[in-house]
Amino acid sequence: MTDKYAVIGNPIAHSKSPQIHKMFRDQTGEDISYEAILAPPDGFASVVERLRKEGYKGCNVTVPFKFEASNIVSDISKESLDAFDAGHKADAVNTLVFRDEKIIGHNTDGIGLVRDITNNLHFEIAGKRVLLMGAGGAAYGVLHPLLDKQPKELVIANRTLEKAVQFKKTVEQTTQFLTTSISVSDYPALSGKQFDLIINATSSGLSGEMPPLPPGIFAPGALAYDMMYGRETPFMAFARAHGAAAVSDGLGMLVEQAAESFFIWRGVRPETRPVIAALQQQ
Ligand code: ATR
Image (cartoon, rainbow, N blue to C red):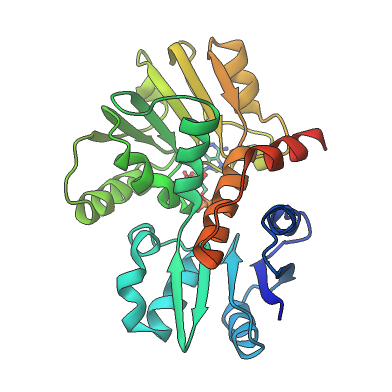
């Protein structure tokens, strides 16, 4: 029998996840279906319950429900907390597994980002100076996998400094062996600094804006990575104009996080490159 999966979000019509998982299905021969489901702003938990009752095996969770998903996981099943590793640390969950009576939560966004940067873009994070812009859910979700790669320095920059300060505290409380020096900054204070990897985890691109980065921020050989996909953001254009050696949107991250979810659900790792290439053609 076909195993059912879905992605839940609001809005959801634009989601490329159904298309990606169908390509994974065709490639691996796994007998799955995958659909996009729109949940009302206050209706996430009841959609999850319905899917469970209908025998779905799991789902992806996207904006704006990733934080709420982490509550559902711990509320419904305390026992699953052991398996609730990456998601719990990030407090933002994008992958749910429905197993027996349990809901197990994971976050595959950070793994997706790191795989895209290291495997697809061939950029080594270890020992580098990294600037992470943003202190919302998107930034939280990728933080631990980034730190696992042991950059030399991580600066978290945010328009609202207090949120970055809180973010740093949470990281320090939830990370045992920190080899990276972590600091927070507002944008003006970045003046005169240089970074090897600059990641835009803000939602600024949605409104055609970018964080106010000073010119000269890109070190020689720097990679500029925007976690948004589907359009050239102002940050990407700025990076091209101000000396970044490579510029990427988040399409590869999207496919890599989907591949990790697929692996969690099916135990099979799909090939990501042909899928990224197919989406780039669109
Ligand atoms: P998400 O889940 O996408 O991270 P979020 O939790 O609302 O969404 O966080 C959005 C992030 O983008 C925040 O870090 C926000 O900065 P503030 O905390 O100061 O609001 C950042 N952001 C949004 N628009 C921005 C802009 N035009 N310039 C700089 N940062 C921006």
